Amino acid sequence: MLVAGSCWILQGRNTPVRTIAKFKMQQANWELFTRLLVPPSQVNLQTLTSSILNAAEASIPRSKPGNIRKMVPWWSPEIKEKILLKKRALNRFRRHPTMENLIEFKKRRSECRRRILEAQRNSWQRYVSTITPETTIGEVWKKVGAISGKIGCAYPRFLRNSDGVVTNNLQEISNIIADQFYKVSSSLNYPRTFLEAKIEKELTPINFDTDETLDDNLPFNLEDLDEAIRNTKSCSPGGDGIHNQMLRHCSAF
Image (cartoon, rainbow, N blue to C red; front, side, top):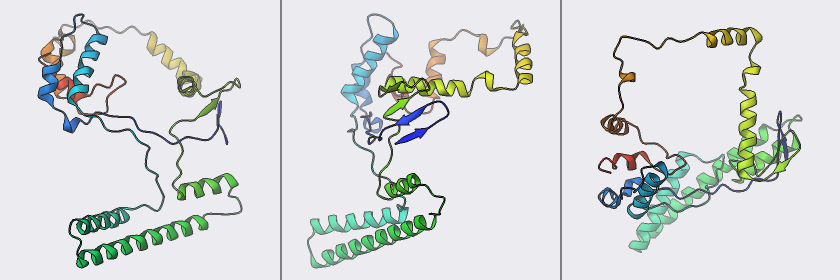
């Protein structure tokens, strides 16, 4: 499969996306985490990061990596609810194998199957109605794959840049894509009149002298750092794997 872009081409089939193991922050033992923190002998970023991660590995469980579930166009909250009711009925029958529970399970299973088949049939009919004489073969097979639950990878497996060099190295692929974004957002794409005004403004000196006592100019201390960390919202960790909640429990560290 070839997908042509403005300056580069994607090549090859995409592989399934596999998730990575993440810290389960809701199951963290923060008392143990704080106790295991060891002050580094040398105050630098690498030793500080290692100390925090070592304490986290021993006090915070990780999720198991796995493949992303197939996504299908006919899925809906109603089907999710039907499947949940079927599983509950099955678990109830396993705990209490009575005739009444068996009938209830078969009823829920039948309802679930019927709703899934209806959703699949309706989805297929909607798809067929979109096919016109102008629809390409590639678009047809892409739709068929989506109905089957086949999804593309989040990144291209192979990439060829404008120089014709093909690579499957993820670091090189990232650099090529980043270079393309850089070219697209470059100042060279702006109109000449805008660039002239931009250069003129940038050449104008900025006077930072002031008699006012601004908070931005005050020294930054540990109390300010603690307050900033406390007020920071929880979000996905960066490349070092350190979560904001870990930093909140490092005040004594």
